[in-house]
Length: 360
Ligand code: MRU
Image 1 (cartoon, helix red, strand yellow):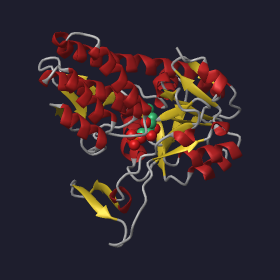
Image 2 (cartoon, rainbow, N blue to C red):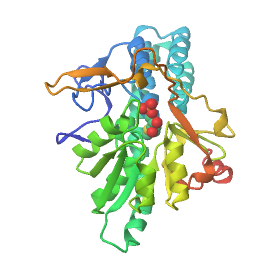
Image 3 (cartoon, rainbow, N blue to C red):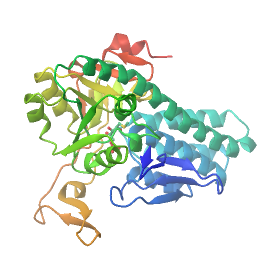
């Protein structure tokens, strides 16, 4: 999508140098810094320290991590080592495990001498696949937005509330939750987005608001607790979020705070959708209680980072020294609060029967 009018992906291979490039998302929204991944260790760090984040993107980044590992050593031991390091970089989003399994299995099936070239081609293919998948999610979700627009009895735009960043920065391009929004806007539907700031890492404020701004989608940033109030006032037509892992029964694990948005949507008869590629479905888990929830450093809660009036990045403490914090990074929205799952294979019910139809 666009940054200052120029098309970008969140991760790509530089055509001249064949180096793997990505946008360092820790620096957004104030600085667009592009960095190079040089080896497996840097890739693991980029995932665990959230230079890149978002379920689909960390999966694709891991695929590129394998290609960097294969540049140094194409042995089976090296495949196993890359697998162990990458899969453990973050625990909750299942796309990471899916990508690690897919790449390592394919690499093990071919002779050592092909692994270096093949792994890079495979990672590039997975990046392209992600873009195609998100296009499909966009088209499927578009129909829902169009229906809302067609049924409007007042001149207000279609008002979508989203949480965290499930935009193009969380994928290779287009996003999941934002794909239908971009699709609807390109079709000419008047659309508006309420963006939850998403403490503690502020993915909404730093990433979603930034990408919607650059792509000319009307939006307003709100504090995480404002959503319920806006729903009560009739100012939200639908909620669309992403997902890090969705289980067989339709439970949706996503950024911490998603559950409360779903509860408020339920109480106000507002449709609540999760937009996700089928690779985010964990067919091995019956329900959300089995999902490992990442607990991140308390520092993320005790501090906040921004830009000073002089233009310098600065991290400040928001509590007294000695105050402790807890920082669960994700929560589970029970399927009963989920109106539907917008996937690349269609919009389906958040239930076992519908989800099983997606299993190849
Ligand atoms: O901790 P993050 O920023 O990786 O969490 C991201 C989210 O929760 C997204 O909503 C989710 O990965 C879906 S991204 C299309």
